[in-house]
Image (cartoon, rainbow, N blue to C red):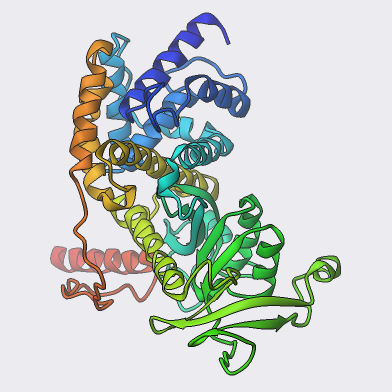
Length: 466
């Protein structure tokens, strides 16, 4: 990298760090490390020709695009023009073509690497009191997202079997591991919604190897299979999950620990078709599991010592699982990832990675505000933080260096006030009151209906001329 290009990249990193309140020497203030970002760009993008939309410029604009309310490429290009004018550089064209080509050139590995690194650095830098008894607690869950109906997207992410061809949209399944304490997305995997080994448990098999010994994983009952729990236990990861619906629980059996609380031995089932013989042989013959009935749920856990973790503590810990539902809602609703915009599978994966990277950056700002405000990150509103962060966008990006610290302090103090109300035991029906508009639904592909309308218009025109 020549000196001119290096100065240009260094300035871009500085402005990016200023946008997300990064300052060396402050708590949680270095999740975008200056030197490492430059190293990641070089390793993932290799050498590149200096142009208006270099790899880092494109990545930053992509992040701004998914954080903004508009989400259009035209908005991202306009932001790029504003930044160039502020730096005294020659104005760029407002044509979206060069930016879209730059996004296509942007390595997927760079977007995913930066997203995971930001999440890992935020999780590693959090204060010890935020953790549960000094242990890292992770949440896992899945979601689906739709995308434009193109042939390429349909081939990689087929639509639901219940929809006719030409009337549905491609669907992708996403599974994410999220930190309970700071809310950062640590790992994720995506795939189609139908086909062999495309379920949430199959995606978790690919992700779980990144968990660390001593972690605790909280999940819903669809993940509570024998082999998944056995593998996690071999890795030194404890679990707290709901009992799988297909497994019967009889509290009259096993070693009694308390009322509806016992230890029981699970026997290894037959080898499933998807598992090879070597992996099956490595699985233990039995598992000692603790089963608890509390809060209307039957919970299973590898935290077997009732004196160390009581029944009410297990219930309180499992109830924290709901946070991942709120996190996914923030990503899909507040950040509008429920309906993607890209028309090719490669770009769809980049768009998902860009959303999760942007989400982690917002979480890093929330963590700093929580630390300074002496509250927990989970007590702050993600949506309100995103709104305030976008309101401060231009203020921070083009701020002189001497005044940046003061403006960061005002921003963090404001975010620390955006606290969620305390509503213990809140229950709401999973239904909406507002009715959708009574539009007719497409029952045939759009191009067929358009051809019919054109023929009718032509017939009316010919009849009028007669």
